Image (tube, rainbow, N blue to C red; front, top):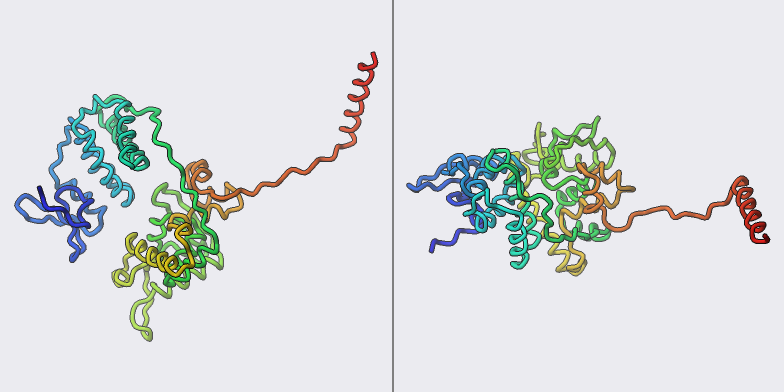
Length: 370
């Protein structure tokens, strides 16, 4: 039995290692010579599948998965790619030996039921979604004629319904460093995804047109019009990350990220999702341990996006703010709490309606007498 992989390497594919000291990914070859893959996980995966020996004849589902992970998955967002790699391990374990031509809808249902019994029904849905996407590409690659997964009913899911209150946000912010407080304010003002928030930089802001963002997931181009609230947030962020040097000899940077860790600020790199998660959990645990928030009031970073949508006046405004491709997604997942609607008041009859109603009543009486 091989030695257990370290925590930073356990979710990486075979042969890939992460050197913590150099902050770089490598491919460990058969002769123990390491091939440098890159510093970012996206770059590392692209190079990994270029160097690794993979069979592209696609005789098995395992071959299909490998081809997808090399050609398609690295083009997606970094978090999506990492999720695909984790899901691929489960799919390879169950389907890897099968011939793609033998895959049927019943196999998908068996897999969904099996993973549900293992306690991961929602994870099973994500893994099946990846398998379905791989089979769709298999049609494009000419390996199969049609995908067998039309109309598959997935495991039932209940959308997250935590509605964060203004009081909970205010208490949480008391325990946050100033840059994280500004992150929360900007998130509530724009409703941007975490990936897009961490990529924001000085090139996205202009005092004339406001904040321009091309979302990473839907590629929508959004412009948040200039307003005093946004200007104040970004001006303060500039004071934190827009200058270098000591207090008396600060030099402004031409390009700077809105959110950067102290370690990465000198390198002019954005804050990583792990860095944000660490700061977020630290502040949340302090708020809970001091008794100002209880565990039921605990909320996640992504809940702020839903709060921004729920604070909108109507569904159309929320749809525009979040930049969704389909309004049903906004309504089903992000609009939480109660929607305000106007009640109907009794309507007074017009003179014409009164005349018509009196005529109908008179006819009814005459018929009754006869």
